[in-house]
Length: 328
Image (cartoon, rainbow, N blue to C red):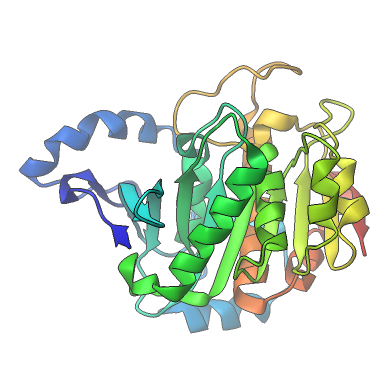
């Protein structure tokens, strides 16, 4: 069962001609969270103006793929519902934030998981950005110190719940087009969820890390397309990051962002934190991760495969913005 929290937690819509929050007097309790949302990079808005999801898909697939396009805000308004409670059983529940794209038809759902000692809020900009491109996003909060194998299995149960009863969350979710995404150890949890048979079309891993060799057996069981978007290994090197490309047997791709470090794979609305290695987080690198993530989510959610996203990286690879591109 999926239970929405009080409607006073609804934060309104993001109008892409600017930020237009539609707040009733009863919503005044939500003003404090809005303060951080002012940190919206002025990326501009795409010129693509579809009336629905089908037209968006047709338009984008009819043009040359370019992940830089997804640096711009998409054409759709977004409403945000904070702290939705998703009950997986009588004793297990998950809290998540739902970013709903304002589309008239059913659309893919991206389920986004944080990493070690982080939270769903650390991916708030990414979630909002993806939703402007016509995909709903569920930013999930799980125990942020692990155990990550258990988190992966919980994520698989969550995906099954949403796939079986999507209308409990939102009637505009397409249960056949769920995409999983995760950062750091959250990426390892996503891989575990796929190995456990989560009903997803594929996954995007944001500079994933694996704790131990225990994860290898799970990686070998993954049978869905996986794209790993890596930080620059010359700047920071996530723990056991090589496992994912090495041990997922097929339909896996990897690309690194030049100059990016591990924390750039997050993008919260709060002021940028200091990286543990490599200096302060850079907004340009965060936007590169957000762009690549959105391209990959679109590719998986709208085509079921990696070809569109992979093609979208071509010019950036040639220019050196992306490197170490691998696919098998």
